[in-house]
Amino acid sequence: MLACKLLYIFAYPYKSYCVLAGKPVSAACKIEMSPPRVMVKFGHSLTANCTSLYSEIAGIGWESTYGGVGLQTGISTLPFKIDTVERWVIQPTCYVTLPNGDQCEEPLPVTVYQVPESVSIAQPLSEAGPMVEGKQYRIQCDIVNVAPASLLSVYWHKGNKIIYHETFKESTLSPVNKSSILNLTAQRDDDGSQISCEAKLDLGPGELNHSAVQSKSHEVAVLYPPAFINPETETVELSDRENIILYCNATGNPVPVYSWDFPQAIQEMSKNEDVNQPFLIPSFQFPGNYSCKASNTQGTRIKYFTVIEAPSKLLLLNSSHFSACSAL
Image 1 (cartoon, one colour):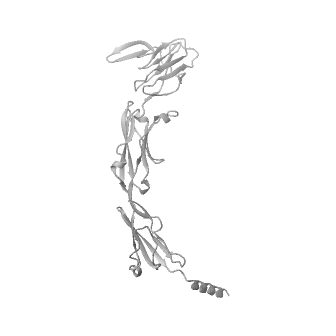
Image 2: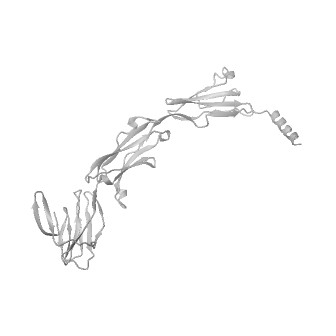
Image 3: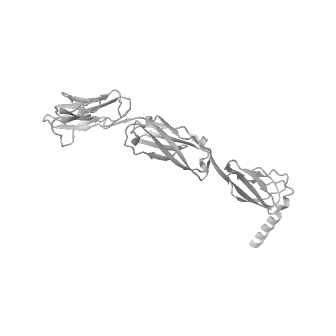
């Protein structure tokens, strides 16, 4: 229904036009809207009040292509109501006619919205197979049936962190489908993390908690070469009291396999050593150069150990005696 502050209406094919009575007021219009703007979900009800702040008026009304109210007299506040919002574009304007025939009008901003019907990652990461460290991947988030897209924000989450945020320039007010692309360079720290995308309409305070829809979380698998937990070169001192232990622990995906090399002098004696473990307790405590190799499908790393004799007690005693004599 078209409600107008009209003098008369004339018809033109497919449209109706209103000729306004009186002349517009040039000064600021003394009209108060409550609320000043409306965010309404499609299919829900809409209510707003227009109040004239003039001491005297001839009438007040709402002009709208949907739910308009004709000129009313004897009141200063007039509600605008729609029981069920079924259109995506609503442009109500409250108007006041003053006693001298001048008119004043104020539009009520109305946004009709619809939260996404669904939000999902286009191809589950588990189906795409593991990523490889250093390579870049495109992950797509599909947002279905959302309006208006100009208010849509997409947040990409990795665990509890937001790693990417995207907004859209979209003039269409009715529901559309949108997609967001995350360009992710795989890192070893990503292995085992959870990736998800969240679509949210920026509707202002009070509405945000009801407008967010999040996809299922997908676990990321990243293949990467071994990396030693401790430095790649170590010097270990032989002890008279206990056997030495050489640690070669490494991280990697797939889990690394290990192999050891011994000094030439004890290779024959070490044939029965278990050389497939990330640590080594040599049966023969012998100085020299040892090495450990950690390997997986993504690469190989080698760790080197230099095992040295511990200074003898006699040498330490002589050294202390020499220092004392020098002091005298």
